[in-house]
Length: 159
Image (tube, rainbow, N blue to C red; front, top):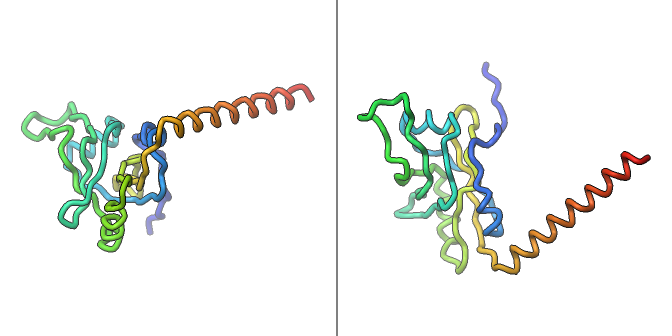
């Protein structure tokens, strides 16, 4: 009997999403990929910057995620790097997302791509856009936290 593994390290992370949005909820969705795409994802040749997801006709689609073509695959079997990719979620999750996306200011952004039990998954975040002053406050908070950690680290070395 094979042991089920937990989530592995992310293959690709959308750091810009955490900078530009407040993430309110997270969902994990499967991805429908071709053979050359899955090889590229396993090699880590994925870019999620600028990518977004949308609910269309009761299905969730991922747009503008760039998965580079695989060098070992022949030209005939290559995929379009930025083609829309279907995401797999339960029907009630899709309905809940569709209802929440109708609210003003909410969008669906991919946060990372990782593997769970040898299957490629994308973590989606239901997000609300940050204003410029929110970004400045987050940066100031992060810098203050680093400064506190640095001081505490110096104190622990001195003792």
